Length: 365
Ligand SMILES: Nc1ncnc2c1ncn2[C@@H]1O[C@H](COP(=O)(O)OP(=O)(O)OP(=O)(O)O)[C@@H](O)[C@H]1O
Image 1 (tube, rainbow, N blue to C red):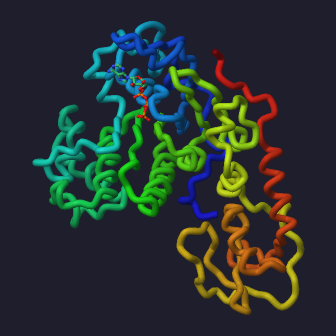
Image 2 (tube, rainbow, N blue to C red):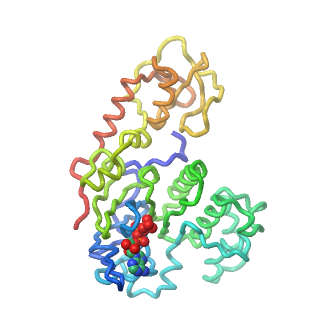
Image 3 (cartoon, rainbow, N blue to C red):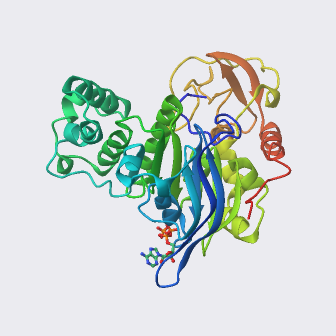
């Protein structure tokens, strides 16, 4: 697969060390609303943990307890081993990047000045700040020569979100909190932002807590996904395959419900064990027929039919098989290494389901 493809695969990153830990953390607002109920949850180092659930189930409140925009009523929230209640909020927030849906860029500051905000607060010298701003704009796909001098109103919504991500990452924070960061972007732009953000997160190794109400976004991005139910109850926390294949409660089943197999297709990958020997008469001609959305290497068969590559997502394989029901050549590094059929695709789906963790730990409370 191409390296910029979100995976949400189990066990690919992350160590067992908790960077963020909720320890029976509870939030009750003054009017009596219990937004978060005695939450026990850990986010491991380098992990991208996604919180998902219906509106009002306490996702944002949970996230905002980490940087003390919301104070826990009882219990504790620890960041890098320290109870956040004992840390000065301003110092805390300089170590925790925060990206929200409407970004909150400063309208009268240029893109470059916006990204430089935290380095300036930290007293970095100008040369270091300028270099960092340029590097980050490159990282999020905005050429500094074009974009650094623009103002927020001169950007598209997707470009503004990219600046928001660059600004949050500017001082290389160990922790990044993201609250529906791509919510205002149209679906295709959103998919692209997800892919690029996934690549950046892998590259930088930042520990991320990400809130969304979009299950597809959650399973594409998350190393693990935490599902909440109204009242701030954690229903299940597991890798995406386990979540889809073995929902632990009715709320989770309902959330992932219709389309869970289709979602599994979008996270499972074609592996060598799914592939039969090459069939005679087909060879890739190297012409690009990719629709640009797939993880395929973009080659076509010698007769113009589709091919897929080892590592492609199973939904890409299904798409190719829909156009070539007798089977599709499989390539690796541009060479045909085998052939995949619809039966083999079904086996690959079953293999993906079988990889779900049998004893899902679920929430501790
Ligand atoms: N300041 C507040 N005072 C009282 N209740 C609040 C306050 N902020 C949030 N709530 C309530 O707490 C609950 C959880 O809200 P929260 O914003 O955490 O949910 P959410 O899952 O992020 O929702 P959404 O997906 O709609 O953003 C909701 O019932 C909400 O109405």
